[in-house]
Amino acid sequence: MAVGSTWAASSQPALTATLVSRTYGVVAGTVADSLVTIGLSNGQLFVLGRQSGLVRGPQWLTLDGSGNAWQQWAPPRPGLGDYAPRTLFALGTGDELGYEQTRYSFGSGFVCTQGYQLRHIVGRQLTADSLVLTYREQTQTTTSAFPGCGTPGTYTTSVQAGRWAISLRTGRSPQFAFLPLLADEYLPQPNTSSLFMGRAVAMQAASSACLASTQTLTFIPLYAIQNQPGHYSVGIDDAAYVYQFSPTLGLGPITLGSGPNYSYSLTYYSRNGVACGLRTNFAGLLPTRAALAAAAATLAPNPAATTTTLLLAAPAQAGTMLALTDALGRRVWSTPVATGQTDWSIPLATQPAGLYFVQLLLPSGPPLTWKLVKTAD
Image (cartoon, rainbow, N blue to C red; front, side, top):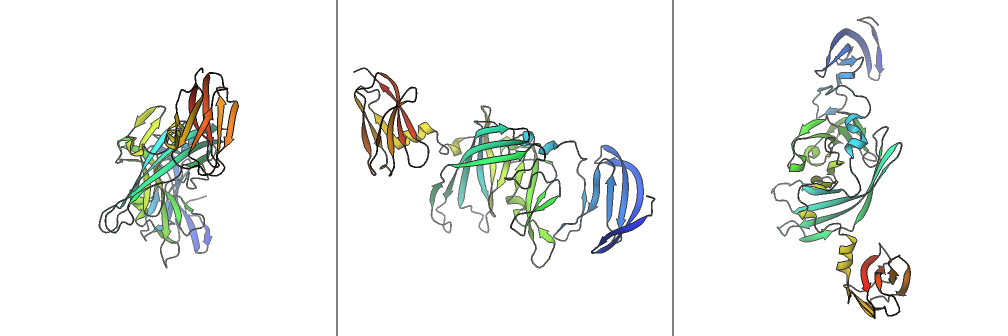
């Protein structure tokens, strides 16, 4: 096509396109490429590269009426690049992620709540086309007694299970719908009037030493401006309600938007036994099975010869069972537990000496287990 050629670019609105120039230039400061410039009859310009694709173009999505043009941050790379799931989610079974709640303060500057969330990776599955991570998480939120903050106290959620699944081919994930949006690419949020938009890969300093000066991928929500169809604004959530990933760290989401006024930022992690940050703030979260059992009941005497007693910290729920298994996991004794009962005697006289396990089988949730040593009579 010769320079000066024109064609119909759009019928609504009616726009004509003109091939303005053909040149040879440098894209993103590093890549030599053949470039063409196409002008629209409304005055907007596109620059396209043979290798680089769209290099420069009009800002179809208008943010606060700024009317700026988008500029390519870096040339395309083969594969998923920084968005590769193995890069973004380089986590394994046993790794931990600790997030601190960051909340906007309106007016007084006093923050009423402080929250912490601990996530523990319990499974990693890599197939031919996907990466799947499963985890357990628990959140604790403390409300201050400062006037106007509401009812003071600390609330701890029950332990929740979660799952991340990411396509190795496309980088997309049902849990993170915005992956892998490119810089300034946008996507409607399901069942809302808002959008998600990607930002350029950038080096960003963070308050946490674990995340300081790390390369990040950032995604933000955009909200429709009232009475201005097609116009969107980042609003106050430009700073608070964001999602960030770090290809250089591979820890999954390092900032996780969780509501309109707050988000969770990673301040602690442990990967392959190497920790960064302090676990102190998360010490009460995701207790081990042994810790849960120790808090729920005591078993004494232990060791025992003829009998031992399990004493519960709280009355038993309906449907609770008590069982005794040997070291091979074979059940050698069991009994139903009456609702409200708080202690049981477990007979041992007929059992040979050795290692046993006392199990409290609950109507909901995993069983609680205590080790028991049976001595000779």
